[in-house]
Image (spheres, rainbow, N blue to C red):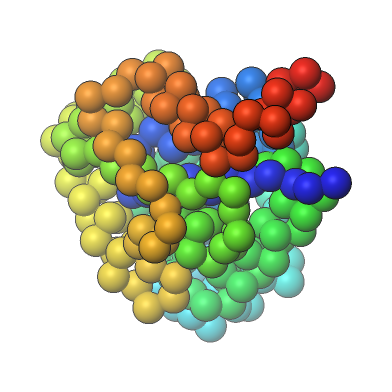
Length: 232
Ligand code: DC
């Protein structure tokens, strides 16, 4: 049987994971939050008091870094649920450094491909369309202004009790991460040639979900779509 995959890439806080989670439920696809995995590696480095910019230090922990994600998108580091912990500001501000090391990326890309091997999947990150799932059925490159993204992230932080940083502080952090993520040597954030750009600055989550599902439906054609919907 054919497997279908949706790759969503884009800068920090562009709403990728919220939309991807909803789509995964509607289409019964596996959702993989790849950012959470890079965050888990970062957390382990911080817990060990290591410098996230130090490549040798990053390499040294990879063998003792067991990362798992369940179907609900919860992430486990060495058996411990760290889903909320990895969203905290200390991890957010360091993750761009830890995730830039070649060996860290190799380990996680392998894990991500393994997860996508045997079922329909929707995966979000920075290098899904360009590296992880180069043959994805649909590739979306999602953008939004840094201000719109900061406003969304601040609301989310307050709702989840993660931090009470201001919109300005968050916007600065987001712009810094965008710069590092798109200028790094290994798999920088960039639009795949065959990705469709979607600007979500003025879209609600529901509109974004609809837009992506419509693009997917067009891509696979009515026959496949109808079969898929019937089996839901
Ligand atoms: O999507 P996020 O904010 O949770 O991602 C956290 C960091 O991980 C982000 O700064 C870039 C990095 N990342 C990456 O390099 N490649 C991915 N596929 C996903 C995330």
